Image (cartoon, helix red, strand yellow):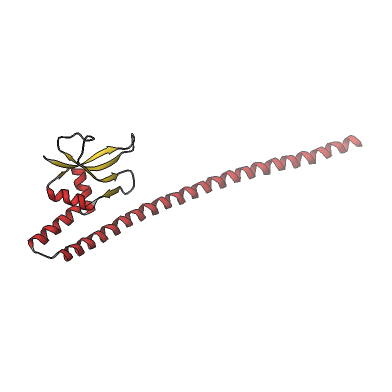
Length: 174
């Protein structure tokens, strides 16, 4: 049986959410599967992946062929890095502890990069919000200025009318 590691679609229309599953190569995309090893949510920024690392590594080492998208996800999560390091251990290039330390260093670097990307996105959102707030303040100030001018004009007209009213009454009395 040829096994594939593939995405199985879920979620509502316009908001895709995927399960990462092990399935027979002949099974349809959303059909029967052998095992669920994780989830993938491309709607967040950056995309969120929840993966059972040990099971994914097992299936890759067993020979399950991932689709292109899943291969990219597994590569980013470090499954292929660990597979590569395990091959080095089997060949005797280094021991298991060295392989684990190399993987941990790689993973730490990867996490720092993801955190930096998240902070960059948050900073851009904050800058955009600040810019929009400043623009709104300018618009509100312009509106307030126009309202103040109208009130001043209305007050001047009222004062003029009051000044004209006593002047009109004075000649009538005389």
